[in-house]
Length: 483
Ligand code: NAP
Image (cartoon, rainbow, N blue to C red; front, side, top):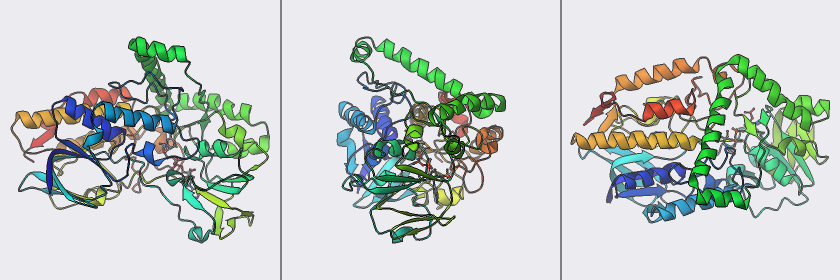
């Protein structure tokens, strides 16, 4: 059994960033447990063709670790993964990561005021446990009749099999979410036929992705303030993009403007009608793409809007009886963010797990700690997701709050800290009230933003600035020390 001051689970942006911040604050004894064989979290797992970030690179990086070398306005997966690997190496974090450590359980040991964490290979203890396991880490396979009977290769976008060639094959893809609209244009030119099974058409706005010229990169390296200025401009643009999510009139304006993108890129009115969303913009994640609609107009692409009746060994059968023969089936069916996979395994002071306490609707004080779970912190926790900007900005606010709470614990000579029930309940009431007037609640769509109780337990209901201001200060009265 090895003991550490801090254990972090997960080596994506959240885990790496937290480790950097902790060490800068003088907490040296930090270890990251990672189930995969290499670091990167979602950027290590998702390797499908076309995989890229839909937030501009200049904003999708930490303010304390800018990267003047981004080659495109929207970085691709390989470039982001390489950036993270570089970030971990230059901040001496890589040698703090223990790979192949799949966490099975974590129990609060009140007698010793520490967490006991069991992994696939060992038992670890730590004063403080930080979950940086991501909201979108465990793929969701759809519950479709006959799915497992499919005879050919079938895999989820987050488990892409690079050994399967798609050249000249008949390929089916289920889903038209953020992952699908990146895969579709990337593979369309190489496949013989592509059948796209769409259940709900997404709102898609232009991305205007372009290469960043060498001279701009040199300028960013030489005068970092120029990159900071570009970052500020993007930050403000995204804060404006958020406004239609709260205000119905602005929403109608946004729908009219963004609807033009579909009109300009798809000339066939019948196809256009089937691609047109019928819910308020932003209710499901607003997508960005320059090449999804053009790909859908190609002769080797068939858009299927009938429901899927079943999967057969040789293809897919739609509710209207149409049968598509397929060689390969791709599942672009997303994740389960409202059922965090580790929640049943993390057991707090009262002997109950996070899953038991949450009962299908995750709640956390400021999104980063939970009453009854001493010395436990969450990154990317409940209600910290965004539909409009860089989640890394949210992580930075969480790093600040967590470091502040740890400092307050130290200053009091306390062994443990957790938010009080009252502070957490007050915060959650305020959140729920704030959500009532958002498009996610009233936009007329079914989305994974809402959990099975109908609560929005994934998204932050305001602009990023408000969250940063809220978490920028620790209010000790909201926490119980020696909880
Ligand atoms: P997603 O947005 O949840 O999309 C899943 C798709 O599969 C939807 O079109 C959904 O249809 C469809 N689907 C699910 N179950 C189905 C079923 N049983 N039958 C038919 N269709 C079914 O998942 P995702 O595209 O992987 O994206 C998830 C999130 O990952 C994104 O919202 C985003 O936050 C993140 N992401 C980000 C990027 C990026 O560029 N930064 C890229 C990829 C993903 P319905 O809409 O009808 O449910």
